[in-house]
Length: 457
Image 1: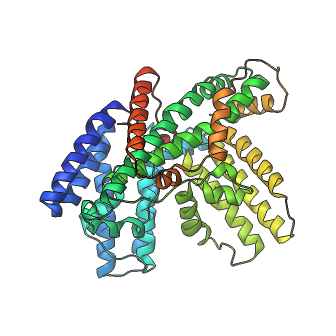
Image 2: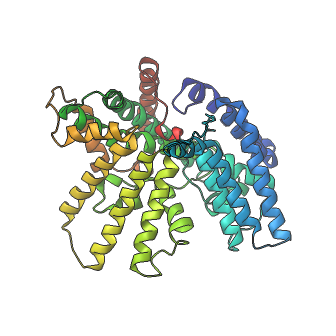
Image 3: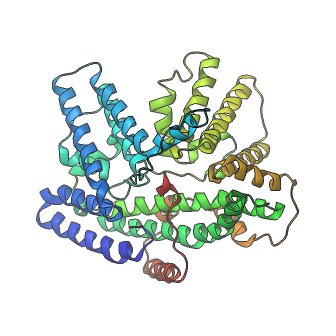
């Protein structure tokens, strides 16, 4: 079920909260098992066939962790990490590799067309974070219930944020509604949920109606005008931000309702003045994962400049491929890796870029590379790029109003987390948020309800 669906907002979430409050008050030892049950129920709503896959991966990795504690071995955890990646590759990349093989004359590799389990990219990385830290001696062992909740907690199982075990597992032992600030945290959780939902419904989804027809036309081989290309590129630049950051705000808010604090994932990324700054603000939990579990093991900045630039390129290229099984995603990641490498070289050469110019260059680079992220093929991306660079008819009817509003909010407004925590507790504020929630529900019932973009990854 979608966070922005009636069945979630008006049925599952209220029922889950009521059960959680009752159990936390009457039988607190059953609180974590209840959250695990709720999480598997939420996950199974999408497709019950993949519940055994999620449960099996949790049990297998937990057993590996237990076995490693009792019988430390050099290859046990690397083998488990490889098995997790192999499972991800089976469902997500097998057909991609088959398509690559079919480019070789004479080869006919079969495509299996396996359905992609929702959240597999995210829960695989959660397993890897824990196992890698366990091997390094940083992570303790946990009981099966706690580990299952860490992996499957329903606000973050489908599309993150990527939560490290050290950020959440210690919270499982708390009595969230016995805290002196319990009511305030609950209220701020509700506000975050409503703000995130509003970003998705009032900004992200309307921008999708600007973006999707243009990219669909490009994918069908139709010519894209200059006006359409700029509309689609700028529209998607802000659509993906409000769609994904809106989802994250909702996830953080829902987690707060259940007494758990998840890490923030966005910090006004379109204010970034360099590409490095952008990746410190965009999908922050993924950036930290790639840095700590891929870039640093590849050598990071400790083994000379060529190794550093190469590690950046490889990290971002693989990060691009993680987003989707396609050459366009690989190219998107590779371009960001090359851009980050160029930034390192410029820093070493002591080249200083004025802040306004740095912001403009970063914004242009990010927006132009989003085309590859969104396009379904290089041919479709090329059709958009032709329009962007004036190699197509001028066209007319550029839809700018929602784009302009989105740009102002993204670049000038505070993040949802900051805004919610700055607001003072007032009855008028509660009434305002209640009214906003009603307006969102009316909007959901009136318009097309789009899935979150990152549910596809």
